[in-house]
Each structure stands twice: as C-alpha cells, then as structure tokens.
Image (cartoon, rainbow, N blue to C red; front, side, top):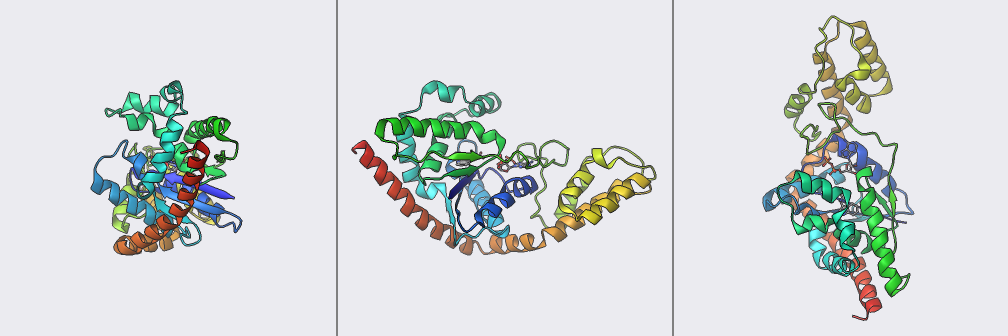
Length: 323
Ligand code: ADP
Ligand code: TRP
C-alpha cells in the first residue's frame, strides 16, 4: 500500500507533531508491505511564509526531525514538494479546471484563515487543489492526517472522481484518509492544544538549558509547595505522563497527592525525562543539523526517486486527456 503525507515547513517540529504525527507515521512506514511518501509541503507553506531563509531553515529542521525519529529515507520516498513543483503544479492545473468555485470558497480552512490572516492570497484559496495534486500524483492509497485535514481529503476524492468521470476510472487513484481519533491532542505549556501558532510548544531539540527554560514556563496553579496537588488537572503532570515510564508516573502522582512536592520539582523531573527519552533523537537531530550536506543528499536522492513516479503519473494523465 502507498502511504503519503505532507508537512508544512511553517516552524520547527515540536512534541505535539512528534507524538501526534511523526512517530505514528514512522510506525506505519515500518510495515514491509507499505511504501511511504513523506514530503515537505514548502509550496503550501509559501501561502503564509514568504521569508526564503526561514523557509529553508524550517525545511531542514523538519527533515532532520523525521530522520532523527527513525524514518528510513532509503526504503521510502522523502522529498521537497518545491523540487518537483513542475509535476505538482501541472496536475494541480488540471484539477483546478474540475474544481467548482464554491467548493473552495466554502472550505473550512480557507474561511478560517481568511478571517484570521492579513495576507489572503490566491494560493490560500487554491491550497486544497494543490494538496489533491500532491496526493494523486503518487497514486497514494492512504493519507494519515490530523482531524483538521478531513475536508481536504474529501475534496481530493471529489476532484479525482470528477476527473475520472471525464477521462476514465483508471486515470487517478482516489485516496482514503487515515484519521486516528485515538491519537491524543498533546497539550502545550498553557494547557491548550500544543501548536506553533499558539507559541505554546515544546521544542524537544533545544539544548538542555534552553529546554529547561521552556519547561519552567509550563503553567500551573498557585498551590503552595507543602499542600497536596491534583495531578489530573496539572499541565506538568499531563506532559510527564506522555513521556515517563509507568512506575515514574505513579510515583509523581503519589508525590502530588502527598504534598511537600512542588511544581518546581515536577518541572525538573519533566525536563529530565524529555532529555532521557529523546536522547537518541536529540543526538541525531543535532548531527543532521551540523551536517546539512548529508540531509541535502538524502533529500536529493528522494527527489530523484519521487520524480520517476510523478513523471509516470503525469504522462498517464496527459494521455488520458489527449494532450
Ligand atoms: P501546528 O498546529 O503546530 O501548526 P501542524 O498543523 O503543522 O501543527 O501539524 C502537523 C501534524 O502534527 C498534524 O498531523 C497534526 O495533527 C499533528 N499535531 C500538531 N499539533 C498536535 C498536538 N498538539 N497533538 C497531537 N498532534 C498534533
Ligand atoms: N495541508 C497539510 C497540513 O497543513 C499539509 C499537506 C500538504 C498535506 N499536502 C499534503 C498533507 C498532502 C497530506 C497530504 O497539515
């Protein structure tokens, strides 16, 4: 089965991305029956981020994070969308001509973004069509995404369906979304959903000192040190529970309930388990960020492999269209 997913390069990868998206996708890619296509959606990112240096830096950090978390780029497909822009945008154009204007105008994510952002550009409007092209260009069967992407996947199937009604059912492969409802929403340091846009995220690849600074910012209530505390409503405990071992979690729970254990202690413990549990990933991330040429090489190899598949699909599609 072909599994495909794209990640925007709008910021650095954080604990929520890692536990909610990166680790589960890597798990799926380890199945020998699957081929995984993993790409950095830098053309999509351009809708919101115009600074080329920043975009490049984020792209490398995201690529390094996937490799550090164990993605096997040699067995799978690992590439930047911009390096295959000719194919992606060509298929996008064909799909554009099958896209009813109201479908885009009424899309949740467009409505949301157009209310919030100052820069409401046409790229933002046609964003879902590019996403549909990203997916169908590689004949992907399954697309693991977060709940917020459900509508984009429905549009992909609609556009693929309309195209196939015109040019034949074997023109494009219609993908299924894989939305894992059981994946927890990882809370940020303020207790809301951890997100780049809320600036409440934990970047586990920071150096130990910087990481401690972020962990110290986790919001707690004002219960004094000596009093018992409720672990179930506390953000430090919630985050600790996501990474520590069961016996450690039980121990922290009883410390909270007993009193005489402060949030400062809990934060130090959280910092220590983050450093310990992600030790291998942190080391590899650091390695790749200091050896950008190796990252570049892996991406370029992935791009050469992906181009072969993209070209085949585009040629099939052009034939169907009599172009
Ligand atoms: P952000 O909200 O930080 O911009 P993205 O929208 O780029 O994150 O999300 C990339 C992937 O990471 C998506 O698959 C998304 O579902 C997952 N993800 C992001 N934040 C969280 C979170 N707090 N908990 C679980 N998964 C998350
Ligand atoms: N829109 C997706 C997001 O913001 C990123 C994306 C672009 C994508 N193209 C894709 C995801 C194709 C899956 C498949 O998260």
